[in-house]
Amino acid sequence: MSAFLTYLLNGLAVGSAIALIASGLVVIHRVTGVVNFAQGTFAVVAGLCTSSLLGLGFPHGVSEVAAVLAAALAGLLTGLAAVGRPGTTPLSALIVTLGVGVLAYAVEIVLWGDQPRSAPGLAGSVTLAGARIQTQHLLVIGVAAATFVLLALFFGRTYLGKALTACASNPYAARVVGIDTRRMGLLAFALGGLLGGIAGVLVTPLRPISFDTDVTLIVNGFAAAVFGALTRPVVTLIGALLLGVAETMAAGYGYGSHQLEVALGLMLVVMIVQAGRRSAISQETA
Image (cartoon, rainbow, N blue to C red; front, top):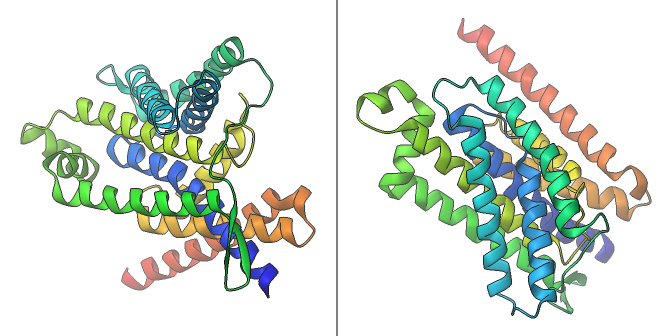
């Protein structure tokens, strides 16, 4: 039982990191209609920046904040390339984000090389109800929870957040009332970079980061975001937590080499069931 609780808590930590990646995808898609396949790159940039800054002697806190801001800047630059020109279609922007991800490989190899890097995090572990969990995992869960609360307050209580929500709900009406949808799109990309950066600095002490780590990150994040239909943050969070727990359970019970396949297979089954229910509801409504 203690092993099960350990895997569960560790899975919640993994799922929390995935949720941050997925939430960036959801924010960008809700505002611009673009699926940003460079989202994992933002986490990699933040993780590599954190490793470099700590290696140069910068203190914790300063290094992580600077790395997250670098990821937000990367998100803004990606937004400029993807949606900076008026009239860019979501499909064209999606292709641009793929190109940005490939270009990022070359830049990251030039700056940091092709070897994985890590960074020190919180040391030690905590025992909860007989389950042992690393302190860094607890930090991931806590920061992710606080981030989602702040996002809810931002979108629900601030003018800027409501303007972003308006662009997501009805871009035409938003333009009519004077909201610059292009600027809101760039802000969404910057916010996506910020969320990806937070995930990157939290994950780097747990697993080494290299230029191609974004593949795993975007696959997991995209699966969770699709679970939430790329529009529903709460459902996306639930999907990410399920995915993280499934991966950890698979690894803990002897299927470590297939943990990603097991987790994504589970998500696929759940999404098929969801799609069936939505079709049934639509037919009943009709």
